[in-house]
Amino acid sequence: MSSVFVITGPSGVGKGTLIRALRDLVPGLELSTSATTRRPRAGEADGVDYHFLGRDEFDRRVAEGRFLEHATYSGNSYGTLRSEVEERAARGVPVVLEIELQGARQVRAALPEAVQIFIAPPDPSDLRRRLEGRGSDDEATIEARLAVAEKELAARDEFRHTVVNDDVDRAAAELAAIVEANR
Ligand code: 5GP
Image 1: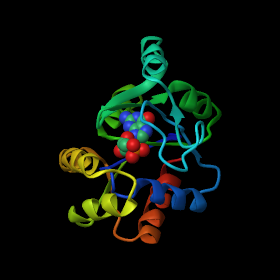
Image 2: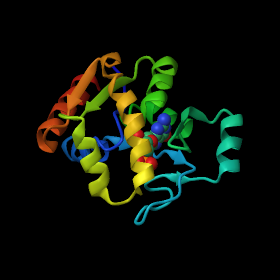
Image 3: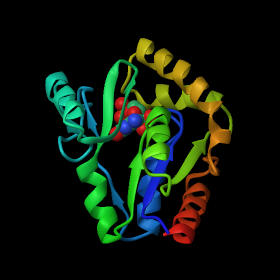
Image 4: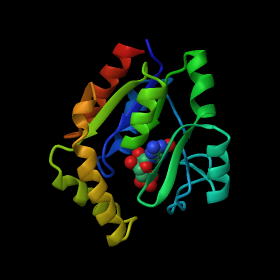
């Protein structure tokens, strides 16, 4: 049984909202806080939403081997620090990684026992609506994210578990069932 859950899926699919709902359903589940070189959005706090790092600091930690996985996404670096995962996993505390596809593939290679779940949109046109509705990214950023999202959608067959985010409550319940069955 594993205590590491990797949740991936295209930007705009609603991973963040689903994971919040999942954590209400499965108490004790902890979330890995990723590192990124992206600038904080309004309302995001350092150490809570992300560890916001400068480029030099991010690259230094890469060179030191401190990331379990890391990837470039839409021009910024993102990565999971080993410290976020290893000691929780050793204590048997279930930890959730919310990461993009390249990172999920790296975790699959490094930690094959991790449970990988792909979140898919009911309809790919939903992604544009959600990214635009979020109001936090400009048009060029949204177009870049949609181009990546199309490639990511093609990867869903790599995943043993796929959850379609057609309805947050229903999808969160399905995710919770997968977590409960594997922890
Ligand atoms: P955002 O900029 O919208 O917060 O995140 C952009 C993408 O990066 C999302 O698909 C998110 O899941 C992914 N992401 C967040 N943290 C990590 C991480 O630690 N590693 C990887 N590989 N992707 C991440």
